[in-house]
Image (cartoon, rainbow, N blue to C red):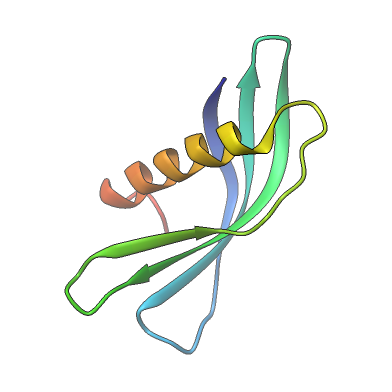
Length: 86
């Protein structure tokens, strides 16, 4: 199981400058099929520059949620580090 990509990434306007909120569709590759899951997440920058990623709850009937959540957090963190998020 791996995250192939995030599509339709949209940044929501938030009044707090150190929080960025996004909505997207995650394409997850599972050995038997590809799933498309709508997700939303928030990246918050702490006072010392550290970043915290919060992934809102989502539902998956085909695969356990915990491994998907872990893979998504790693994928999103990498995208943010590389500057690929709007």
